[in-house]
Length: 123
Image (cartoon, rainbow, N blue to C red; front, side, top):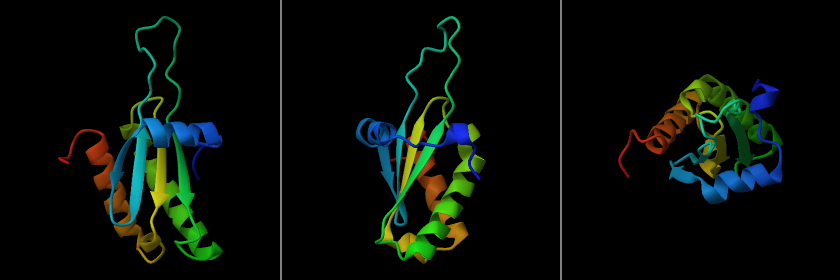
């Protein structure tokens, strides 16, 4: 389970990540990343936690399939929170093929998208 302080819940936070962040698309998912804009040298400022949210539409499948995809994505993101910049907002949008994908395929696509967004991959 994703810790409470790392969950995106408000509509405004989702909108900020999608509209102002960078995007990397893969065959199974699209990842939006909005880096934290806090000044690390400001006195008394602690970096806010990285927050993640998920969008899994009915195009992915029925309720059971959508919940399975969300559980898998939450687990995958939880393992990768330390790699993301503090204060960043991440939105993972599952595409229709994600419902039939295995855990390993989702992990591979998520890693490739995050690597591209964090500057490790070419366009």
